[in-house]
Image (cartoon, rainbow, N blue to C red; front, side, top):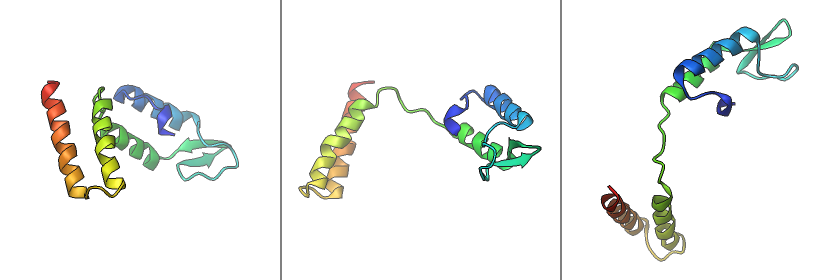
Amino acid sequence: MLGNYPANKSAFDAMIAKEQAEGLGAPTGVSNPEYFERDGYHYLTAGRAEALKEVLENTRFLPTKTAPILDIIYDEAQAYFAGLKNIEEVTALIENRVQLYLDENR
């Protein structure tokens, strides 16, 4: 599970190397394409390690103050789901309100 890996590249690489060397991961008797079994241990496959590294390298953190923007989206989206406005109207309102919020909070 990716949630158990550190988000620092050098720490991530060290953890992957340790997992590949020590045979951590999938429990015995469980088929899992992310691990291969040898001598009773399950080792992380090179393909899975590369996929995890790619996820880490492409991760972008969200701004810390997203709640007001999500509130704007939620408020305006209700009109669309209630059938009161079409998607173009709602999109324009969301874009305008979010831009106004961003301009006011620079």
